[in-house]
Length: 271
Length: 290
Image (cartoon, rainbow over all chains, first blue to last red; front, side, top):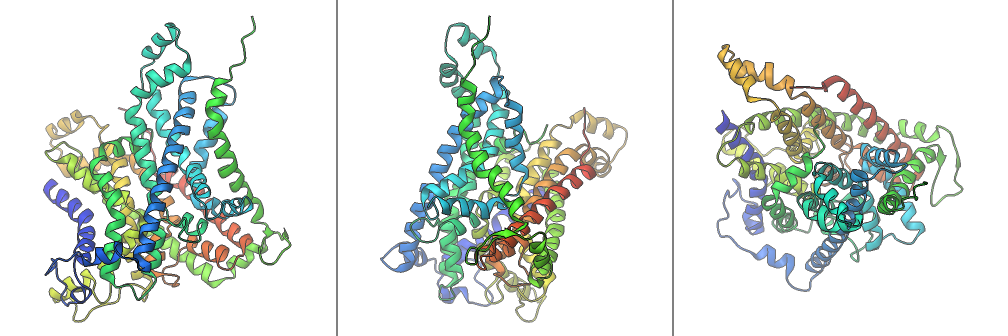
């Protein structure tokens, strides 16, 4: 029974991805064959070459939007993790007025569907001239990811033993020194989890950047690839190569760092 | 002696507070209030118009049809992802060699962008070159290639939601799995000694004790399916056979530039999300102690 279950999980997760890879390694004529080629008859990287090389419109858009997605995801991840770490430390270790009100307000925003705020965020950004800028997109991403990041880090820091921090404080270390030299090293796995999950969420964004960025100066890869899909002149083998290209980074992260993803997703969600 | 006021915690939480207030709470408040206003960027002025936006939405056939579609997405998506999540979690309940690799493969679809997953699955559903048609006709189950998307509404929505279920099931599985791992092994041992079959143990021990995890998994699936956008947008475009309420919100707000109606529709989805989530928790959640 378990073997059957394991076989099902592997097939379910991998078959669609295998199929996209298989399609991307064929010419468009081969893709049209009936029945389909279940393995590429003469594997070729030509689609990837068309997608990424040369000075045509498509490779230009793909390269530009790849830079954009890295900038936006990287910046959003760094800002989110730094701010969430500071706040989570305060929530986990300090007593102050308004602590629970703020903490529950942060949690409450997680209960709202993200798209509730799409239109007002667009209008706020447009008031400040931040539509179609990296700053605008990163601000929106950070506001969206901060609650979960704070929640994960709060759960992680609360689970750390206090004794070491107290010993450091008895020795006269300031609380910021304790945070930097004691808490941060201990909380490293939690911080890594938070960073990975935030990065993956940012990489997967589509509707927000679709609305908030209007041209190639800020459009991420996801938006550009969806636009390619809408054009019938783009052959499906090329589109599959674009898909595989956009999946590569998150797929490698998920396969290599899955330990951190699982522990991060589960911290605090159950119990 | 009076204690000095402690600034440090406020300094640490203030950036978070600024983000939450300015970019989450204020926008949410704007959505609620402006749902009752006429807000049209190209056609000012903005003024209070009571329930006009909601009346306009309910008299719009595209919106009504998208509500039915979203209802079907929720129904298919929550059911399928919960059932599959339980099956996968039970498969992974006990340790075995290679389990961590299987978990790594399991979470893969969760980690990938929904739009790109839509493109990947186009290769399966496509009416000319798709994998499904090729396999079914090789097995002589169909005599000619079929169209799965954009014709029959139920079939279209099922096919699109399966792509979405592919993305959300890994998280359901992990949430159920976490609950399963809190169940003490002795329970199964004594059930086994009492002559309880593995099948009976699944129904009498595993599922009842996994209820907290199943409830959370269902809530996350509910929120995801009520707000589905990427998969129908990529797989079926604006066609009424598959357009979701979130897609309609996007069209109304950013193509027709009727922000007031867009706010009203966002508010409706939000209220539906909160009410249905509470309903699922009330229905499924039971606190469990060992």
